[in-house]
Image (tube, rainbow, N blue to C red; front, side, top):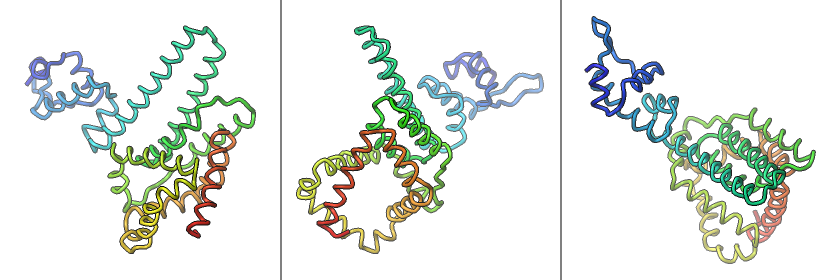
Length: 284
């Protein structure tokens, strides 16, 4: 069919179709007299493009969706839109605060903190793939709410950014599918629950151990089984442990985060104390 027929069939405009063609999203054939001829597949692609554009998906992401793994790209788009919505909400909250107080300095300080935090979050997502990057972002976000106020914090912020810009985690091929399977909303909910449980354990380790002793015993027993040791989960944990030791995560990134965020430094001190208590009970 010709362009005007394709426009009617897909409830879009000739101008929009011409734009999609210029961007390489559509590549219709040409007839002998020079008219573009849209095949059934072109029309189906056009319907997808129109839907995705109405959902706010970028041209580059649409190109990936038309020629790649739909579920992976869509999950990334969802994550990006969620972060954009959160950032917009924070901006609106600060606008309301400014309107009420007219305290320009205070609001400027808060928006600078948000920009610094989001810069670290975006770098984390780029440096660490899929589910792991999201888990790290979820873990570190609460510790990056305060503004950078001292020279030491400023230096630490730049060190964090430089580390994340330079490091790149390459997941072994045999673990790629496992990581992709983890990258679901259910897995993200589990990650959030794990972070909350860890926070509870750090806050009051003795009580947490007493309340969760049966679960801990079962987990430690599971770790000793051949089934677990040969599982993708165990291999991933071994890979992450080696990566953290060899790629400066433990020696560069974590110390810089502690200098950047007093809240994170306090958390690490509590975590170390909780680890000592755990070792006293379980000897490991």
